[in-house]
Each structure stands twice: as C-alpha cells, then as structure tokens.
Image (cartoon, rainbow, N blue to C red; front, side):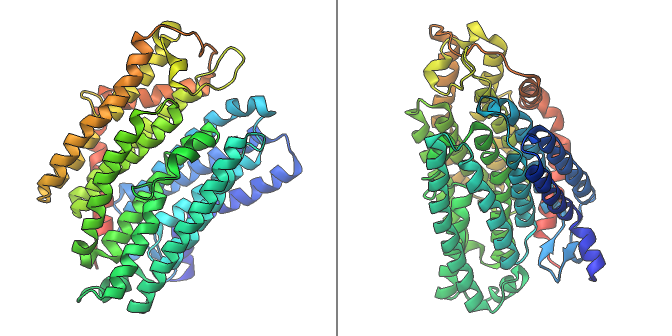
Length: 486
C-alpha cells in the first residue's frame, strides 16, 4: 500500500494531531481562551468520529485497512472503539468548564491534553505492531498524568498525578519487558508475525513474554491485581478528569487488550485464557467487596469500574466472535452509565458552589433535588444490572457468550458475584430516598450537565433496548474485523 492510501486511512488521527497543535498555539497566545479551545477540541473530536464512522458501518476489514506496512489497522474493530472514545471525550469536555469556574475558569491546556490523549488512544486501538502500540500508549499516558494533577492548588490532585505516574511507569516497564521477550523469541514485533511464530509449541520464554505483556495491559484497564492505583487516582483527580479516566481510556485499554490477545496471541488461547479468567473473577469480587465500605462517591465508582472490567473480561475469555461482540456491547452501555454517574456527581454542589462527594452529603437528595436523585438512582440500578434497565442487557450478553463458549462455571460464578455488587449500588439509592435530608447538595446545575445526564439516563432506561439491534450489528462487525485472518 502506498503512502497516499496510508495517509487516507489515518485521516482521523491526522485531524486530531493537527488540531491539537493549532489549539496549542491558541493556548500559548491567549490564556483566557479556555472555552473557545474546548469548543474547537470538541468539534475536532466530532469530525474525527465522522471520519471513522464509514469503516464501522461498512464492516471494514482485511488487508485494505492496513497502513504503513501493516503497523496500523483502520478496521471496523478500531472504528467502534474510536467512536466510543471520541464521544466520551466530547462529553467530558462539555462538563469541565463549570467545574473549573471556582479556580479561575478552565485553562486552555486542559482540552489540548484531552485531544492528545484521545489521539494516543486512537493509535492504541488501531495498533497491529508492538511499536505502534507503545507509541499510542505513551502518548495517552503522558497526557493522562498531567490531567490527573491538573488542579495545582489541590494536594489530592498532585498526589493522584504522582501515584498515577509512578505506577504507570512501572506498568510501562513491565509491558516493554514483555514485548522484548516476545520479540526475542519470535524475531518480530508485528502482531501477524507473532501470531505465526506462536502457531507451534509455546516456549517458556515466550510464555513469560505473554504474561508480562498482559500484566502491563491489565494495569491500564485496572484489572485485579493491578488495580491499586484506581481508587486513589479517581478520588484525587478533578472530577471531569475522573469522568474521562472512567470512560475513554477504559475503552481504549480493553480494545487494545482484546486485539493483542486475539490477534497477536490468538494461536495460544489456552495459555492466556486462564489469566483472563482469573483477572475477570478477581476484578468482579474485589471491586464489589472494595466498594461496600466506601463513603466517598468517587472511590465507590472507582471500585465499580474495577467490578465492571471483570464482566467485560468474561467476554474476552470466551475468545469467540460472540464474546468480542458482547464485550463491545457492554463497553458501549458502560460508557453511558459511567458518564451519567460521574456527571451526576459533578452536579452535587453545596450552596457555596463547592463540590460534595461524600455519601452522607446526598442523604435525602430525593426531597431537595428529586430529578437528579431519580437519574442517579437509575444509573445505580443499571450498573447493578437490574432489569428492565439497559445495564442488565450488557451483563446478559457477556454471560451468554461465556455459556456458548462452554465456560459455564465462569458464567455461574460471575452471576453469583454480581449479586454482591448490587448491595452498594442499592445502598446509594437507599441513602438518597430513605435517609433524613441533610440539604447539602442544593446548588443548581448548568444546561451541559443536564443535557448529558438526560441523554445517558434515556440510554440506560428501558428505552435503551431499542438500540439493541443496531448496537449488536455494529459490535458483530467489529468482532468480525478483529477475528479476520487473511
């Protein structure tokens, strides 16, 4: 494939890169252009979404989607993940200005960092070579470290950024070491070449390389036992940044893990399936048990994200087209639920306009702000997987994929463990509806918060089932593109 064709395939990434550079110049020239830069960044992300949509709708796959000598794949699988990433980033940009008002307004560096993080994630999900994978991963990570510590006047934000940086560097080292082992025993960094080299007997060195690569990726998706950074970073980072961490990077990391496992390591499924099954069950149990004793809503949602990663990994453990499709369906629903939940937390402000995050601060919220309490309750019930809310469908499809793949024990344990998670979700609803009102979260919210919360609430409501056919078809196309072997 010539250079012109390759550049056409990476047009969305080129758009984001050039937009980021242009907005960086605007940020340097005008320190008060935060809102303008945010709007332009959202427009750039919307344009990138428009550019990747045809590949998803058309089910693009095969050699025609490969760019730069097979190092980048602009297929339907990557396009599905990119749309979720870009839409999540737009939502996080919309809710940020109100949060930063008390800190002198949103600084223009914030949307620029979000744009470069989205660019890194777009490269991650399209990577078909370990070199491309690492470039995208580090571009995203470097932006994320700064975003976590963006509130320079807040000690918690600085601590979150430092913890994320140190542990992220450790995870990157583990991933690099695993990649070097894979390269040493296969002689290539290409996913296709690694897949071909692993078609025979798996050597001990290559097995260690596989384990180290998956361990490095497990940190990025916050799967147990590499989840330790998540509660502290989610709590300390500015809430719009936490919203971003819980949605877009989660999609990118899960999609990347699926591509590495099923593309590069696809010939040795039995070798990595045990690791994925352990991570799935451990994440479900640890996430559920860890959330029970939390009094901070952001920490509670952090453990919730760990819990949900476990359910997503059940789809990956199936290792089938149905499993990948179910994983993507769950991811799409999870993005809506997480975005809505964190936006609802963003809307919790006292009379002075300060953010409140404690579970005790929302006692009796149904009396003071009934509509907000209703939306948050629907998010909690949906995250718990309680029918008829749409979150139930996400759990159903991954469990069904596991059953079809003869992983009956995994599905049974996952279903049983999901009951534990229902406790802390219902606890939030109980505090809002049955405890005495404390009248803390009384400040009104702006239109952007209500717009996003309203849209996500409609999606997780029973009306969301109207999307099942379209969502399922798109997820099937993404799965077929990933599992396509020329």
